[in-house]
Image (tube, rainbow, N blue to C red):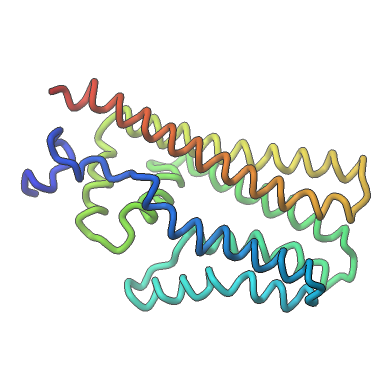
Length: 225
């Protein structure tokens, strides 16, 4: 590895690969566009199945593009497809809107368990999720990102962020169950997607701030001038 790509080199700008601007294309294609299409078509009276298909189309096409180019899948796109599709599919199959609530809770519990369970492994889930976003198909960026694991500050940030994602998913389950006891099913399934989107955006902001704090700490402690 040369000095131009070594993540331990303080003066090297590529040693700081996380920039929020890198997330914008993924947020637009895999988060904003699917939700806007799905909810917008539903509001226009389009049958749920067709609104669902339209909402899932952007992340599906993006995953196909990524797979053709690099033989890998986009984890954010997969997460959004599962989140969008699970509730409406369950409601269509059973004919009961309450099944959508149950499916949402099961899916969020699964994601929460996946994030928290990954803390038991050598590298937590958020390490791979952020790497897919900031490195993409660039082998040099992937190598730089992997090299950052040697720093205790970086490892601590990855585990802390992963724990936050898992806990928020479980918190959303508790909130949805509480709403289901207090409100009608129609009200819950209208409110919950907004809560999920808000929770995801909040986690993204938290992740950005945590990564910025970790970078400052690395510059102060691990990359002294």
